Length: 290
Image (tube, rainbow, N blue to C red):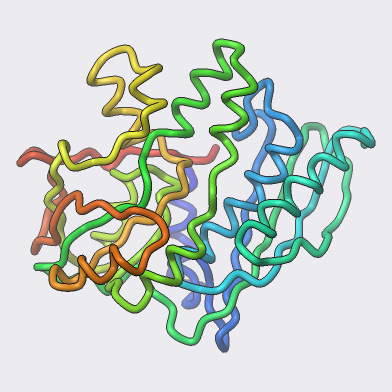
């Protein structure tokens, strides 16, 4: 059973699950686990690992349109190196500070490989769910896509300084809060744009029609991609970019753009059914853990 099958198994048993985070009495809570072998390529600095691990959970808070409050982490490794541990905490603290939240500690454990489990807390009285998209809305994304895929290529090529820089993404908490009054549905792009759109389609019982020319591709992707097909794969399917994917009524786009501190791009429209790009079916393919 893969991750997606496990999530479907649990969906009926956990009524508060199903969005990027759970919301209970205005408290937003989410948790993530990242492993060295699957999430931190060779050359990833521990500062970057701390930033990225905690940032992944903060991104889920952002996707709910919530204010980020605090984060904690479990740091596990075969042994504890002082410099590595301090660097991890520095990265975790700095990413929290970047979104006006606090890193308040966590737990230490021993494990065969470096692993970080993070939990982030936020607050909102009006969360944006995945289930509100309606035909006639437009589909938007924040920022540009493919940054993490480009970073992986750079790690593989030994360009670790630049790769680490690309791996330290900005959680879109400020954008999520600014867009919340306008968005009908929202999630983050941790699984890639294509899979995110399929997830929104399932949650909102609707379809989507995307325009490939409108997808904002990170410049770093164009620098490492072998050809147009490779560029497409990195920007649509790789995932782990932690941008926001959202739907808006068309007449709210101008106001939403003015409100958001991060650029937003219209990449398609909400339809009655099906998920297509340029008139062809868009595969439900993206990042999967394990």
